[in-house]
Length: 393
Image (cartoon, rainbow, N blue to C red):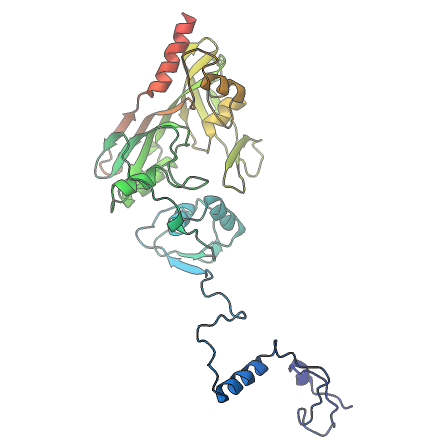
């Protein structure tokens, strides 16, 4: 047997022929192995020609072809940032474009580097600019037709003008859909105000009540979010909270400067914990604390945020040994149950978290004038304070 030309190894043949070295490569072919007609595309074509000659029905034009990729499979998308998304965070942009994809999954693909901005890796908090090219990897979006539509709802308005609207969010309502929530405040308001531009300037936990600022124009949103990051100290946004904690808060503890680290579970749930300042994923977090009222075994605190980390107040106060009353994640669970069931104090049933966004001070994004807003304590919180005061008297 002669030496085969090198190119022969790249051919697909069903059996090695006994060849004359002087003969062309495929002049003679002896096939010793049986032909597998189910796997042979050549046989399939021959079979179709035979069927047509015999007058049989032609193969269906739309018959499924198992060897072809699903035409409905998601594809890579490249999106050019326009004026409507200029200045938006990458994670918020993806949440807007990929409605139905859980935020936990969005953060995973961002961290993995599958999402690219101008062909480079980017963080979730990257600010997009006009003309940026965003590569979005293939992702299947949940069928929104099976999800309940957000019912239109208006919330108690504390302030509204042509640029912003500030509402008093009730406890127990998420600010947006995702992580097990079909919809939140922003989806409900968009439903109630079709066609209006409405975007969250910041967020509140589902269990927290109080002031929530919403932008009604893109320029207002960009300006206020820049102010949240305190790029100009004279425009920094100040947020004050009322928190009722268990125990007698030490008067000397006025500043909490402890790093926090956020971990996201597979189901999208978030858990925050205190870490050392050297932790690579920890972020410096500062809370200013003042005792507003002492009520025996409880303390009503006035907390001002210098940084705005996820669950910052809740984790800082719990780490100090004084968890917030009713906190379902970082609080005293047995105590919370007794309070919710009116075991601790008869005739007083408190089944929410006592954390209320009470004050908001910022510079108006259009007029440039300082604006300070306040929201009174909800009735359930005021009733609990009255009951605790009466118990002490």
